[in-house]
Image (cartoon, rainbow, N blue to C red; front, top):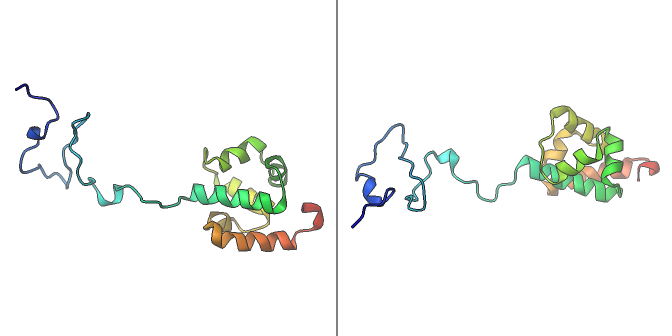
Length: 134
């Protein structure tokens, strides 16, 4: 029988322990094991700040009935950048996060809250905004 690289026979019974690392095997025959580090395990359905920001920007735009271009004008940012944020293609810098928050009328941390919590704050900003902003 021909020996195939990456077969289970290549892994000794006692795995080498270098700071808890297991040998990496490439290819289709790689042995699936536990993650090398507990912190590197796949995060299960955990929303990131990028996802929360995108959801909150869309919620604010729909509440104010603004297009991406109108939100960009309110914040001093380009329409294409607003679109990229909503599609989660880019990470905002801290200065741009401040511009977005100022344009919407909330504090910067509100845009990074979960949408359930942020919507109440965004609604308060919408209610207190002058009619020209609606």
